[in-house]
Image (tube, rainbow, N blue to C red):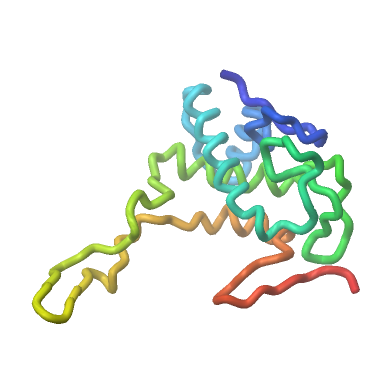
Length: 171
C-alpha cells in the first residue's frame, strides 16, 4: 500500500511526512540504509513516522484539525529559535527524522520495549520482599534513535525532563 504523505491540510489518513522517492534520496545522501524492497521500505517509513509522532508533547502549538492522523501540521507552532512555522507546512525536519528512524526499523531494530524493562535475577518472599535485578534492572529493550531526535531538535520547543518542563518561544 503506497504511503499517504501529509500535505499540510491535516489529512485524516496520512501515514508519512516524506514520500518513498524523497526518503530514498535523503537516505542515499546521508548514508542511511532503507530496505531495498519498496513495500518493506514503506513499512519502515510508517514506523519511523510513528516514532517521530511520539515526540508530539514536545512540539509547540496544536494540531491543525481534530481528526488529522499525524502530529503535523500545527497551529501556532514556532521553532526552537522563535520563528513561526506556517500552519499549512510540514517542516522538512519531520521527513528527515522519519528516514533516520526508518533506517533503524528497516534494519530490524526493536525500538520499543515489550516489557517493563526490568530483568529479575532473584526474588524472595519471606517476611519482607527482596528483589534484585540484572544490569540495574534495565534490559535495554527500549532504543532511543538519537539521529532522528537530532533532526527534530529545532522543532522540539516544549520538553519535559526530570519532572521539569521547559518552554521556549518568543516573549
